[in-house]
Amino acid sequence: MRPADPVNVEDHKTTPENDKDDLTMPLHLTEPLHNLLQPLFKALPLEQAMDHLVVTADQPASQHVPLVEDIVSNEVIADRPELVAGLWLYIDELDRSHTASQQVDTPTGSFWHAIMHRREGDFSNSKYWFRRTGKHPVMSRITTAGGSAGAGTTIGEYEPFSFVDRVQRAYDKGDNVDWPELVAMQRREWRALFEWCVEH
Image (tube, rainbow, N blue to C red; front, side, top):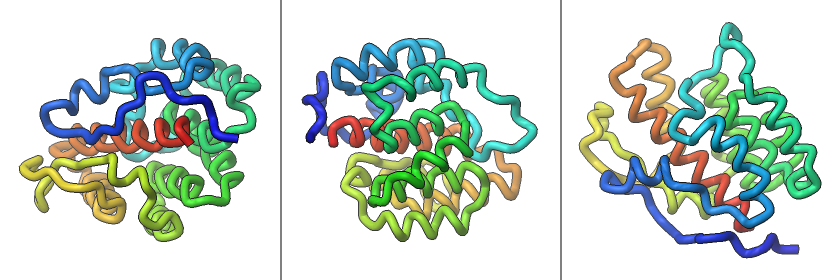
């Protein structure tokens, strides 16, 4: 059964002009999901979430774990593991996201799985899961800024393997120059995939 039509759904791509607005505007959610998720997005807005490219063991657990536990146990979302995987990823709970994404044997589950491995710093495994993802329909909704040097000079279509490489280079070198751009890209990627999951 297809989920209810999303509220205010529009097919959009992020451009330099709407990048900030894209991260601060409300997500396109169905009415029951909107009501259920509002407390989380109010407590942790998208423009503040997932601020680490790679989540390390020394980072404290998210203060939002109890809130997400309540959300994912709700009947509106409990049987939607693709949304559950995304929500755990949103608050940097990688193990829980991993468990949920493993329940989704589709390109969408592989996409969440790939993101999770990239965020844990397992870059080769991330690429493996992106190969299993293939050309997911949501990829055409995501644009990325950044030239070959990561200077933010060009806009192009999202390419997951290049993004993994850029994150790995920044992480390996401790390069904070590209960090804000890559974190913004990570948030746009999450938003597009989560909204796609809501629609489908």
